Length: 76
Image (cartoon, rainbow, N blue to C red; front, side, top):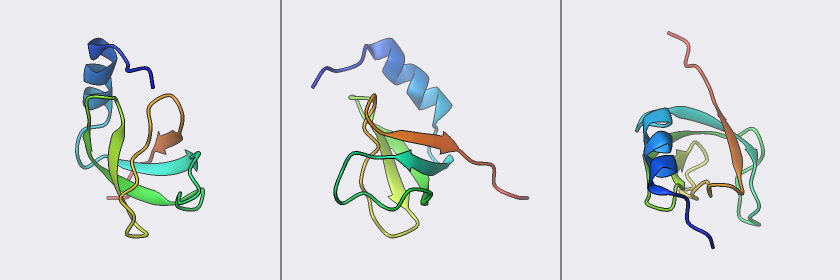
């Protein structure tokens, strides 16, 4: 696994602060939640992976450069 540069990890931490709501678009893992599952970012680790608490109860991370998510807006 190739680790992203420190600058990329810092950018991800700014873009996805704890509490950011996301939706899964693609994940290469047989244990992945279904596409379209929503979750809440709890942090970003040193490899650039998003630490996520999925609405399904899963805690599977979003791997930088492999999996895809999008931010979602919560209705106020």
